[in-house]
Structure formats: C-alpha cells, structure tokens
Image (cartoon, rainbow, N blue to C red; front, side, top):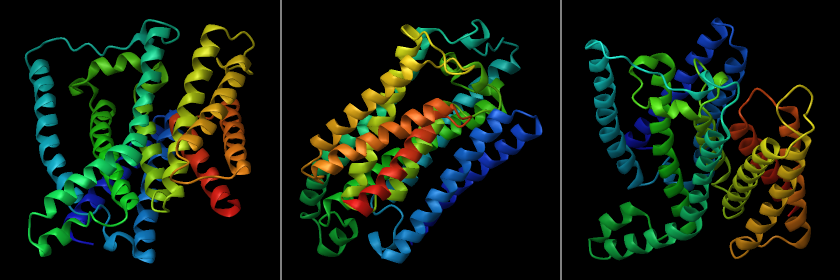
Length: 356
C-alpha cells in the first residue's frame, strides 16, 4: 500500500472515530435513538474498511491498493479542493453570526407534528441517486476504461502500467464506484458532523427542511446512513467478481424501492397502523411486493454479468423482500437506509455464493 492509499484510509478511519465520538455525546445526553443509530453507522464504516484491507492483503487483489491509481490521486485531489471550499462556506456563516445576523435553523418538523408529505417525497427521491451506482458499475465504467486504455497507448509502457486499466473490467469499475461513493461520503460526513457539533455555522441549513424532528441535534441524517450503507457493502462484497456487484446493485434497488413504496403508500392510503408506530400494514405489504418485483427485474437486467438459475432468480428476491418486510415491521432505531442495505446485501451475498 502506497503513501496516498494510507492517507486515504487514515482519513476514512478518522471519520469513523468521529462518528463514535458523536455516539458518545448522544449517550451522554441520553438521546438513546441517536446513540443506537450513530453507533451502528460508526461501527459499520470502521469494520467495512478494516475487512476490505484484510481481504485485499489476503487475496492479493488490486496489487495491495485500497483504491488503484489514478483514483487515489483523484481522491486526494478532491479532498484538497473540498475542504478549503467547505471552510469558505463555514467562514461565511461565522461572519454572519459575528455581524449579528439572525441564523434561522430551518426545519419543518419544528412547525408540524409530522414532516409534510412534500418534504417526505423529497427525502425519498434522494434515494434514487443510488441507481447511479448501477450505471457506473455496468455502463459508464466500461466507457471510462476504454478512454483510459486509448490514452495510455500514447504514453510510454512504464507509465501505462501504473494506470492498470487493461485488466479485469469489473475490478476497474469496482474501484471507480469506490472512488465516487467515497468522495460523496466524505462530503456528506463533513457537512453532517458540522451540523451536529456546531449547528450555528452549518452552511447547508436548508437541508434541515427534510429532516425529521428526531434527526435534529445529535442524530446522523438519513443521507449519512444511506452513504455508509452503500459504501460498506461495496467495500465488503464488491471484490468478489462478478456476483458481488450484482448482489450489491440488486440489494440497493430492492431496499430503496421497498422503502419508498412502504412510506408513500402508508402515508397516502394506509389505515391500519403497526403497533404504536406511524407505519401501516398497507405500506408494509406494498413495500414487500414492490421490492420483490424490483429484485427480479434487476437480476434479469444484469443477467449478462451473472446469470442466476430460475431458483436463484426467484429465491433471492423472495428472501430479500421478506428481510425488508421484517426490518420494516420491527422499526428499529437504526435508520432504514443503513439496515436495509447492509442486512439485505449481506444475507443475499452469502446465500448466493453458498447455493448458486
């Protein structure tokens, strides 16, 4: 592992331990929901990075690199640009406070007992961003590799070998996805840590409009749980080619489709509530059905990369839909964006490599 890769890993570990510090603060202030959710996010991030490093070392994949060249250089370049730019936005907020300007911590849950449906829809639409991961895994990654291969043909062999782009296309796209999701997670984590620790100088206060009341204060936002959920399963299972990326993408689509359907159906036509929660049986059933159908659809669309037999094509979505329904019914303190993605992909991955 080279110096740049060590630096990237160190930065990611730093975020993981910062999450554990915020977890400690939540425990200290008796915010138990935030404590459980933050603890799960912090541990999943740290464990997934550690296991990824162990797998690479043991299997000798990727020449012992965490993110292959040139993505480690691009990662450092992103960090070098992002931190100064984010600091400028934070400094602007500090300047506003210093000049006595009122800082309004916008949040609609302060005004309504429940987040308005319009803003709930906005929250769910942001989940569709994860569909871009499939695009980079199975479409754009191929195009980018072809461009790199063409470029390195114009430069000396000893330099072209550094790019390592003429090997397994799935390894290349795996690292491309790690890079893109990684820089997204770094940006999101930085902003949310500032929101929690120093809310007055948080420069993205309008984002608070789509946060529920319990997600204020010391609890990580749902976008952080989504980012860590996606990043962790990519690190853990993406190295097993090609079944890993196929299961990852299938799990993410099932998770977001089930979550979106369950929430919107429950809020619009749901009548019978589950225990003392705001969730409904109508939403639960609708989420299970849609997640099952979406799982079959993704596995069929990706059949050219890993073609499951009929049993696998049906059994994986069935098991996945049951897992989503169970987690939705239990209504754990851990954010659905983390629990759905992590639990579903883990179960489907080990079932797939064991039975199919």
